[in-house]
Image: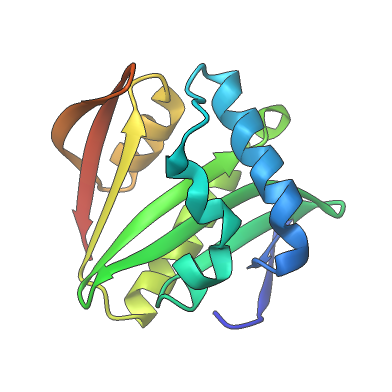
Length: 160
């Protein structure tokens, strides 16, 4: 994806820049708190180093902006040569149900193809019902469940 920018309806999708860090972290917390799925933890450490974890690590991290505000985001993390992991899919609660999570997901899947991944994995909590529906609608299938702290986590995958 490089530094390209895509206009899609009233959202602009572009690669994460270091200046986005605070807004990305705030969106992460806000979106998870809205569904009762936020838990401060060391699992959030990747958001402190997005460039290395995602972009330099052989993946991607995208933000969606609307009127200059970051209202959507998502990451693609390289797991191995053929597998990518979709991470940090978030949409600001004021913008839910407008298809912006779908647009971020499609851009990440396109990027996964460019990176020659043949399989994508992801997880979401039981509380994130809209996310589950998005993934199932896009061909992801449940492969397992596990408990993490107080959450039941659903593991999904998709072959490209």
